[in-house]
Image 1 (cartoon, rainbow, N blue to C red):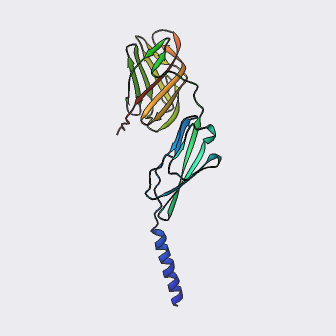
Image 2 (cartoon, rainbow, N blue to C red):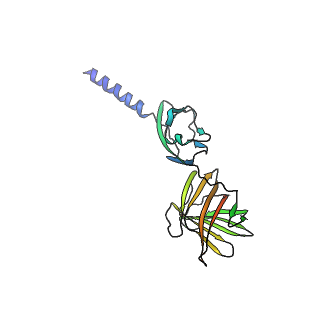
Image 3 (cartoon, rainbow, N blue to C red):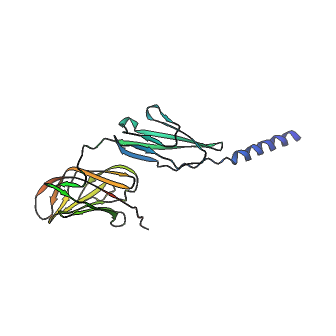
Length: 232
């Protein structure tokens, strides 16, 4: 009659021992998007005394805490799994990495070819309205406005659709004021957000004048430091 009792006590002790093992917390983004050729950084929050092991596409492995890939190729796209071991416990996290084609849009910094070069040295990023984010640029030759219909707060690379009507999260509004008012009608805006600096570029975007029927194409690249302010 004592044997079942002893077995029960052993099982109870084992159960208690197992319950004292708390898996480490892994704080890292679930997805990352970059352009091919950019640097890929997967940087989970540090866990004291922990051991890390990464596996990923193309037989990628690493025992470092952070993954840093310089000049990331398209083949690096896919899922990366990190295993974190600490105090006899372990936990996995998966990060989905998307590698976009490198935009063929190389414009000198802070210029607008419209139809000749314009220089706008003063840049400011900030909230325009709840759910919107504005990037304003000004100079002696005019002002330029970029309006996102979402708060682009994540690090990484993004492609937005230039639009005058839609206000979806994937859309962006472009406006040039140089004595007249010009609106971007279509095309793409390429955005990178790295180290709190937002860089936006566009090439051969057709702009329409609100007061006339004239349409001409513009290309530009703007950048500014930004501070995220969340609306309540």
